[in-house]
Image (cartoon, rainbow, N blue to C red):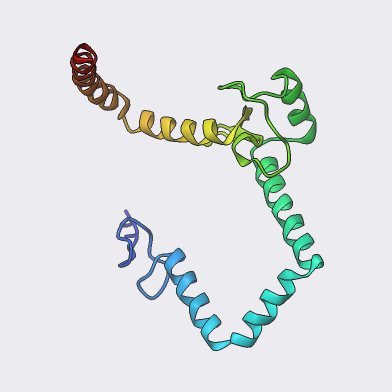
Length: 171
């Protein structure tokens, strides 16, 4: 029987897998980019100037939309499914019922396509706040932390209620 291969861990982040030169992938990439930028200052300035042009701004906007679309497609979302969910939910977040915005500067109510992470099954459309909170909730539930959070809140809720009653009775 073959021995299982030992996966080395990075020295920069012991919880992450080793990539190269003792570093995780993220730290290695950042270090390489810093080195390239310091060795190529003219190329960096040229790139920054190119980004300021209308064509550069339009290109960045296009790439950002493509990235979102690719992630949505990978999670099983299509234009038809998105339209169907928007109609079913009456244009509102499935959790808090805030009106969703498909585009624009207000990121808090911008539409996010929620999906089950292990099966990549589309679920519903959410606002940013609910999408982030749901992610934290799912992680806490997986790790068995919900009961601990509840106990903690109950412990301090009683203390807070008693102290508020004392302050209220003084006034």
